[in-house]
Length: 155
Image: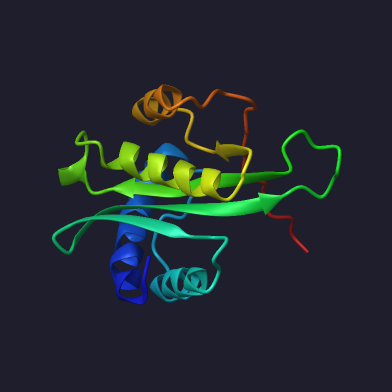
């Protein structure tokens, strides 16, 4: 991602938010905070270990995916450096054309060139297409995350 991509990536992120809220309404926002989103994506420009990769077709952004490079805080970890893959979203008109697969493969190659030993990601449990895609790329379910809302206590 380059500076000129920030507005388009933020717009993709806003579209993803709507879809994600349908999958995980308990923990996902139901509306976009455009100021915060722009600040977030601009901040990622200055973090070489947190790249955002984009797929475009003649200047039209089709999809994006972000990666966070993590380092173990425990020397006994079997994998000392790994990436967390997140914020994958492809425009509906560009889906089922290999865009997501190409973005993920690009991110994995980026990590391999840096000597990274593994990759992980999170996804909505009900998103069967995503699960199928990730499994076809070698990802396997390792843990389950659960969520709930807590009622606010009166003071």
